[in-house]
Image (cartoon, rainbow, N blue to C red; front, top):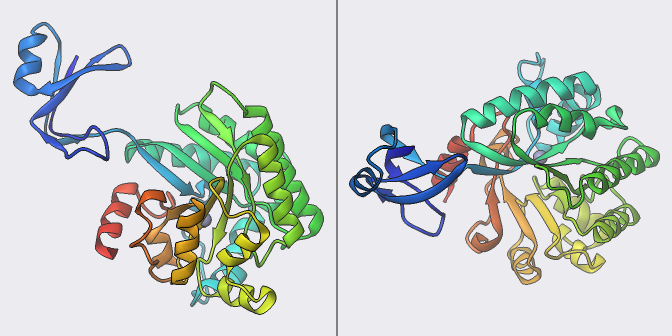
Length: 323
Ligand SMILES: [Zn+2]
């Protein structure tokens, strides 16, 4: 079968090719060339003419919260007016703390369909639902498995509820990641915790030790608003990225989401240690977090956004506007 779009995108490192298409055999792309060349070479193939359309590899969303769609339409008497009230008065009590297994299953099922329709074929999800422990990642994985998407799943462990709940969250990640470690399947896990203002030093070091023993990444939210750097300066005498460096955990196995309120030297430290960053332009708008210092990031930054509020195409447009 031939697919002949207006534009063909083959890789992020090559310019889009106008008037090029692909040949597909079974589930493999076996050739790509200009339309006329393909039609001449394979005259007996069926042809899909995709005029005015772009054919590209699937998008990878490096940070989403599938359960976030459940926040849509919650009636509010007062809209949050910043990052901290957004968490304290809205997201924690009215969304995260209410999530159960049935909600996780339904939201994952719905969001997979939304992602497929918007061209996402791989994603990383961060489940925040402290009262859904244990077993919530298995529930989410079951819902995703039927859709054929590639996914890395995690539970956002936090000590904000209690120390015991935090440890249960880390165990959820460890057990799930161990189960899918070296798996040939489409679903894997990683270790995840919330932030420096909801997790103690010992807890963070414990998370990195678990990840080292499994050979996987550690994910956390970092300096999404001004609250975290102010908290870190007051309590540790350092900004969050400096604090992570002092703990000895800033490195290539660290995936930090948001990273909006960074100082210039924190950006340089991230680059020096080779840590990874997920950039989320629309999510930053949603909570009034601000605009990140993007200019030195390119080699290590991936694009993502809450599937709950947008498709990745909308995020790409937003990213272009920001830059
Ligand atoms: Zn997030």
